[in-house]
Image (cartoon, rainbow, N blue to C red; front, side):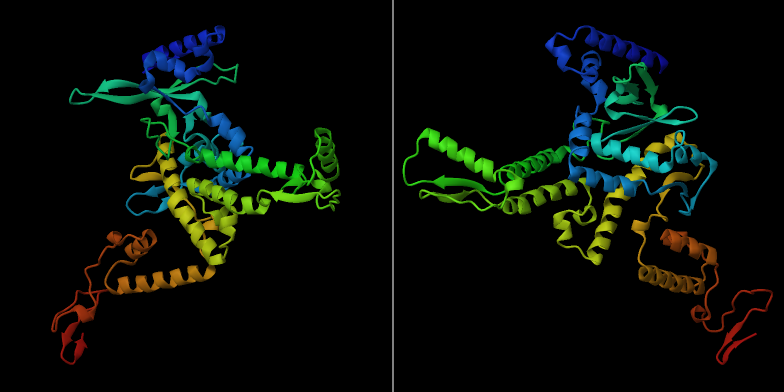
Length: 446
């Protein structure tokens, strides 16, 4: 592993230095470090995120209110969970000292910040990389990471490709050098696999690039609308022919008096038989349907219901029942699978106790708590179920475990059955030192 890391690191540094020293050739000027190493090791040997991370961060997340709102809702809910271990047999959650490095991943950091960083990186690039740096963890910027792999032989002697490590090239940090980190040192989380790669993930923003561009264009259209009198396009028609100078002076006069939002809605006085004609649709006609549809597509790709984000189409159906259903769907279909896969990726960075797995706890997440009536109904149902199972002969401890885990296979029977299940004349085992009871025609006698 060390020799592989040394070869990759040396080749990467040489290629990067060559690029910086010779910026004139078109190929080198247009290629980044990922494509350069691809020339040496082959593209399948070096997988990197698409060169869109910075653009997504600046032009989508940082400049589009819809994208920011959707990612922010995902990030806030995702960061509310707590890290726990879960017993594989009983499904019970428990803590331990090993979780401290996740609860405080870096100086003055918290588990919520770790969750948030991972979710943000995954939304913008499809990948999140967290490195074991000894006493602390380190978040690796996704577009500076290259997944390095090589072809090896399996047990049958056939070829197979496997990841050997991660190359980190912090291009904007001139104080750091290129580093190669082995597989065991880096937790790689990519919840949406890229169909064109073996290990790289894909951002959910990728399929809605057109909607994001359209939403930005609509905003520009709105600004232009207000700059140009905040009214639809206007044509002034005259019965007589106007000279070029007359048309120019007329256009300047109308613009000076009526252009711009400060001059909107002023009375327009026309003379010499001018006939005004409105051209184009009203601003509300354009925005009401087109922009709302684009916003909804962005929310769908993110897996966030429109009503949760506060988008127009979601607010049109905004009721308490709809919001509760939407939040449950958001948590069950989007967040819970992401929590599970993120825990699976991070498990290599902590010492997981035998018979357990790294898990998440949402007990304190207010957005996922049922209403008081639902809680009371659930508790009443569980109590009734517990009483029935204990009367049927199951141990109280196993009944509680099975109900909490919602897993009937965890029930343990005592071997004792109720009198109604005993055949006539049968005796039941002795309990608490008392003589066994005998069932007779006249009832049970000691």
